[in-house]
Amino acid sequence: MEKVIWDIEANKVTSLLKEGKRVDGRKFDERRKVTVQKNISDNAEGSAKVNMGKTEVIAGVKMILGTPYPDNLDKGTISVGTELLPLASPQFEVGPPREAAIEIARVVDRGIRESKAIDFKSLCIREGELVWIAFIDFYVTNYDGNAFDAGSIAALAALNETKIPKVEDDKIVKHEYSGKLKLLKQPLLSTVSKIAGELVLDPTLIEEKAQEARFSCAVSDDKTMCAFQKGIGGSFKVSEIDKCIELSFKSAKEIRKLV
Amino acid sequence: MTKKDEKIEYVKNGKRLDGRKVDEIRPLKMKVGVLPNADGSAYLEWGQNKVLVGVHGPKEALPKHKQNPYKGLVRFTYRMASFSVPDRKNPRPGRRESEISKVSGEALEKAIFLERFPNCAIDIYVEIFDSNAGSRAAGITAASLALADAGIPMKDLVCAVGVGKAGGEIILDLNKDEEDAPDAVDIPIAIMPRTEEITLLQMDGPLTKPEWSKAVKLGIQGCKQVHEAQKEALRKKFAEAEKGK
Image (cartoon, rainbow over all chains, first blue to last red; front, side, top):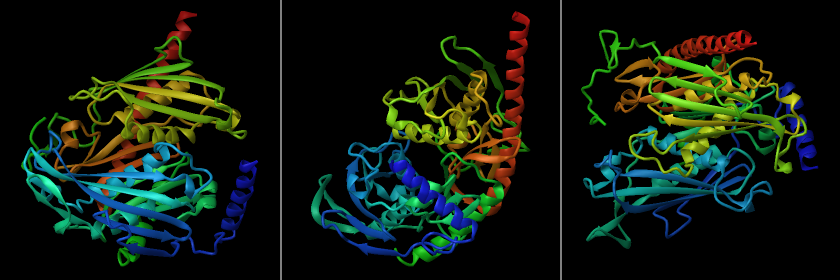
């Protein structure tokens, strides 16, 4: 039954797009309104809440001391996790993250990691022994499509606020900080849905139900891309990918002012 | 592993560290129909990568609530053996394997006439026994062969390759040493060769637009080389079947 309702909704999305319209009246290359609220958790080293239309995401960063990877003894690292909370949508279930959430987290992770926004060497305290690991976790608390972009904005906003805890005798001193985490780039992800052959930026949930393919591109400045991810069963022509890339550069420039 | 060194020349006089040209893929070996219990199967060696794929189905999709009354499901499982990497891999499936499974299945969907198999599932199991960069491309390429071997109707084969950058050069089919370059960029790409539609595309940057344009041309050209090898492997299998009659 639920499936039938989604099909009707999806058909509406498709037929309107053929007339050059989106269901919520946006232009094809227009994002939903984004608002960012910073420092929403006192215990987190950095945190932010992002509202993107009706999609809402809460992100927090915890800085943890750990040992470096054997192949990167002089570097700290990051770890990104996502949960699609059951309170966010009737379609999400209780339990550990599954494929969909894992994909979102890994794509946001790649955007941050590959942009070289964080100098991992600066997270090294003692080579081979002690490094910082930045755990960036974001929770989708209300889902209306495109957790990729909302998560990426929330993660970056939280990182921009992140303080580095004070360390004494190789232990973290709670609620005391030695400085802020320095970000060298501002990587942001933009996601485009292909629906009935048209490309639309920042899909809502019903647009996602109608999409044949999805493409996300993270850019770190006006010239450099740092991650791609194509998803869903459909396909893209090279010219369509190029168009998505253009949209990503344009969109990231606008969002960067907010984070 | 060699220590990452900025001074390595990844391309010298048109030759790469392993002697290949910038647009040359590693040696490919493919065999179709290797597992008696599977409906379709394939074995692929691609450089050091060794991949075994079995396809089971189409069969009734279970649990029932997963069924789609309009089209069949593609369920792709990519797994790496514990001994397939230099340090032992924890055999428990990790996040990387989950993501690769998801995008690889999605890369094959468009090529299959799924609307002919409502409420059914096609299960694809990819096992990597040895790896050296490019194992997801190897998995998709071999999976497409196994689907053909299972007699599942398809619009086209799907062929994949990794393209990317090492030492400032855009190169095809990176090996592990190239993938570990300090400026390495990895772009796995899969296409349906007849229409050149892209069905898988990922990238770990940083990359500029001109570099991307160069990379995607090289990637599509590489996929087409892989496609020729796929066709040859299928022809060989059916020629053998013909002889055995």
